[in-house]
Image 1 (spheres, helix red, strand yellow):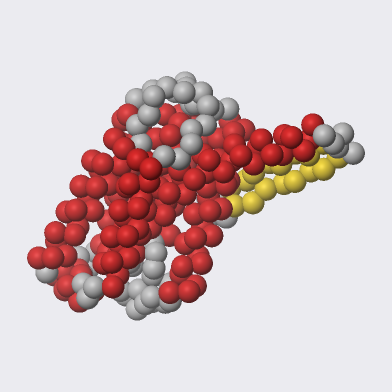
Image 2 (cartoon, rainbow, N blue to C red):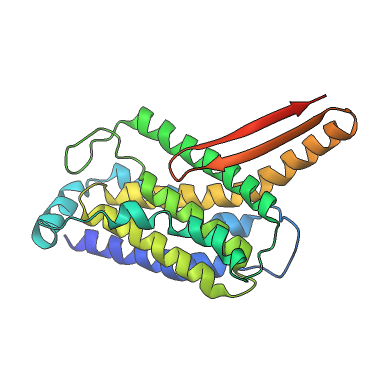
Length: 247
């Protein structure tokens, strides 16, 4: 029981304190390359969560939940996981200057969401971990947590130069999402930790992959008279897009 409480405290400490500070960067209107420093937090969460998955802490978590949150139930986590997305799109609309144009932000959103969801669903399908409430064998990792932390990461990338509090607010919501998944008895602690790592890494990767793809597509268009337009779409649950090719 004591080990599980220590893990919960460590999770909140890392997510609240370390993530926003580590993702702070100088004012810049261009995309940045992924650095080793930026990989420290997601690498720690991914490796730590995987190690926790291998240890026998599940019984301690079940005892902890039965003692403190046996009758707890809420669907708030289903809603607030998308709050960072709303901030990512909406802050610029209300006057908070984003680093990149709306089109570029949508490109980053589409690429990152695709990477994040693809990773999450692949792991769920291959690991087949039973949820704490025995409802399904798709517990590892937490998709809600990955989704929320991905959103928080791109918010921090776009708006932390205006104020670090935008990133802190987004990460606070993401952290609360992960905590509620545990309190609702829907995920193991390791599911949430790895989900947070996947979300952060997906957000960082999107800011590398998107400009690379944009550059490659731009070169192809300059050598080809045909017009290619891609409009990414994300409805809160699925990612997709419209590809238009004209001659």
